Structure formats: C-alpha cells, structure tokens
Length: 132
Image 1 (tube, rainbow, N blue to C red):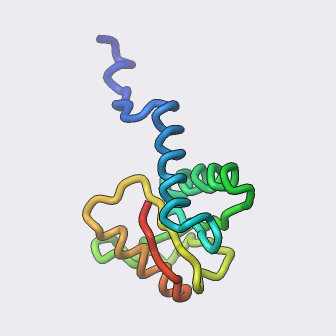
Image 2 (cartoon, rainbow, N blue to C red; image 1 turned 60 degrees about the vertical axis):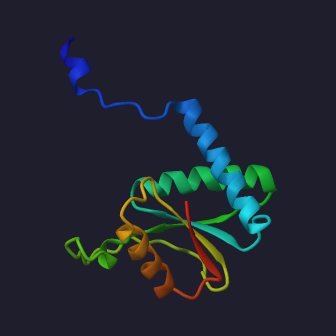
Image 3 (cartoon, rainbow, N blue to C red; image 1 turned 180 degrees about the horizontal axis):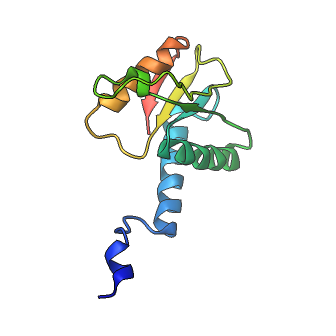
C-alpha cells in the first residue's frame, strides 16, 4: 500500500449513486407535496447547501419551474456548539405559508434538525417543515 492510499477517504456513494439519490429525493418531495407549488429548500451549511441546490435543479427539471433555495446557518441555534456572531444565513424569500424542506447531508441525533427548525420558524411561520 502506498502513501496515497492511506490518505484516501472511503467512497460512500459514487457519482451515479448520488445522481440516483438526488432523483429519488426529488420525486419523494413532489409526491409528498403534490407538486412543487409553495415548496422551498434551505440547505444547512455547509454540505446541505450543495445538496439543496442539486435537488432544486432536479425539481426545476421535473416541474419546469424554479424552486426557491436558501442557505441556513444553524450555529446560533445549537445547544452543543459555541455561539458565533457571524450568521451566514441567506434566505432571500419569505417562508410564511411555504412548505420548507430542510436539506442536510446527515440527520443523525436530531440536534441539527431541531436547530434548523428553530432558525426557520424565527423567520416566519411556514405551512410545514420537512427534512431531506
């Protein structure tokens, strides 16, 4: 084994698997919400942002209409993280009466999900909040 193999991280999903997963998640969002009307996506910094953008692109491809997408910084809402004055949230639309879908790369203990829901509801009262 040479040195380059020791530094390589495990590949969990290759490009084709990731494309299929994005498509599957996008179809589930459309089925659950009976289309993309009033659906918006917020990606949790940092890896959730890229996933939200890919899902939004797939939804636009399927529905023929753009889906609003924003960036959510949950640092200030976590009870296990050091607070930062720098809020990098960028949600350029009103969440009131929308179906907000929070996108992150890992949803494990629920702390991030709770923090994300708190951050979203501080900006308005959505019709619903879903996790992807």
